[in-house]
Image 1 (tube, rainbow, N blue to C red):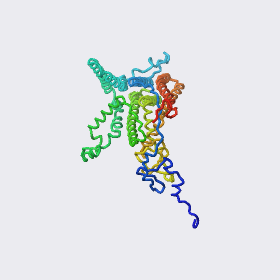
Image 2: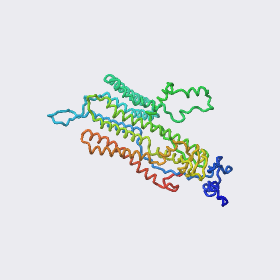
Image 3: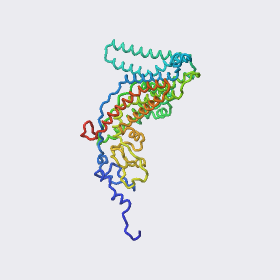
Image 4: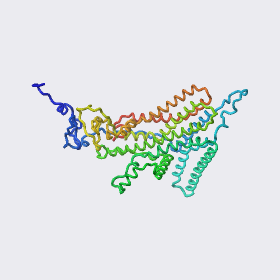
Length: 494
């Protein structure tokens, strides 16, 4: 008020009443960017670098035991066996009869209408379902025959060619007979998954494959613009190359698992190394998820949907039960592939990388206006609770070790998915447990013989998958429950 005592200004309060960054980290602040207050003034420009003053807590990782994992050949055999059982169940639901009627009212002499089945279609589906198993056998034979004698090498090559030739001949024989007996519309259903796979997967390349060449490369600028303007659909050579590479990835086993290194936080290039590792893991994880989704949908399509497309119009079947079987086959194949392609060791690798990456929380404008704020730097390791400004927005560090790009949504998504190491495993257990409980409920309420037999066969396969998931959950739950201290046994600190 006029004539009264003038109190301290709002800027003086922000500098005196609130703790400064010097109090938080034990020194002055600076790295060329400085400290921001509400009036957007920068102080402490002559101070030592910020990365040398802030010492975030070291990231400690739990050491998990090596859990048994099915080999590639064993897993493919079990998956093929499960799909064969599911295919038999679908045929039983479609072509069942009322064979238990008394002889005075004969309805059928067999339990299934075998004369209505198309054996060429069943053989074609079986060959398509066995494609991964056949290729895994060929790959195992090729790897095991590298260091033997010449005679053994010739025998292995002959066996591999004989197996592939036999599968190709059976596939062509079934296709010729299907073309003779069915319309063109029905034949289009045979190759529909491959028609969907090409545009969705072949033209989606990760990371550096789609980036333009560097400016210092000996490449004409006009040619760069021409290649960037061209669409993949108008480049047949690139189309065939992408198709061949994706088919090779589809039939081959996954490559070696990426490795994780814990760079010291005092290293000047540690944030860049962590972000580069996260990008590599993101690409590898997306490739595995793409493989899981395509193979699970592929299996459900050929097992449960394709037989329905070739049923005669006069044939009656339970549509609700067949659609329910289609959903169950897709879910079970999805869980089996996820548990094989995302084993506990791989999930722990993603968790360690997410712990080093950290996460930023975007704050509202005007919040924390009097708190110390810093300009984000890509070469700085930020501790938990620090406020930074990036792209005209305010962010707060959530993790104990933060090097993520605040405005990058993929980094936030990566941290959300993998900062808890058991998140994916718990999700798979919840999905499989829900399927098993629903099938048990349906088994108790079933009144038809084909429903009872179908649920019994499928439940027998689901019990094995659920057992492996629960075993891994119990062991990993105990491993991750140990306190994260450097002196604890079974822990590795960084």
